[in-house]
Length: 123
Image (cartoon, rainbow, N blue to C red; front, side, top):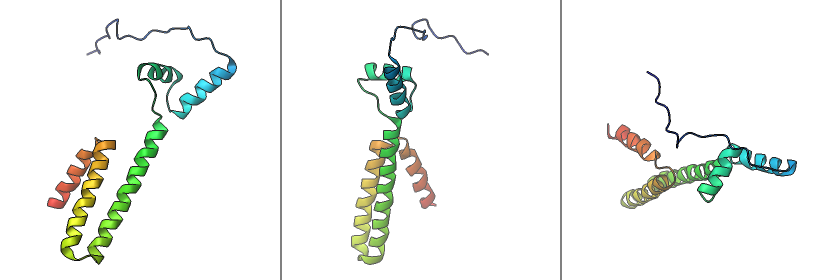
């Protein structure tokens, strides 16, 4: 079965109205490449969204969160070894809460991943 056709209002059409110098064209192409977007998508998103968010910037933020998660895990493991048991459990719970808040805020899709990890430990 063939996919239904898009409505006329949703269908994209070519619009050749942009006049740029070679330097402007290079600047637009470079900005689009840096954002990991096509020039068309860059221009559309900069107008409709008010700004464009670079994919490289998102990757940087996600990598920073992964690093923070590793550091929190290291602290939790050190607490388990060096702190008295009741304090260690309380502080580990606090660290886990911080980690989950990071995930919910920056990577909402990761909540499902952590639920699977929790199920693995429950067994």
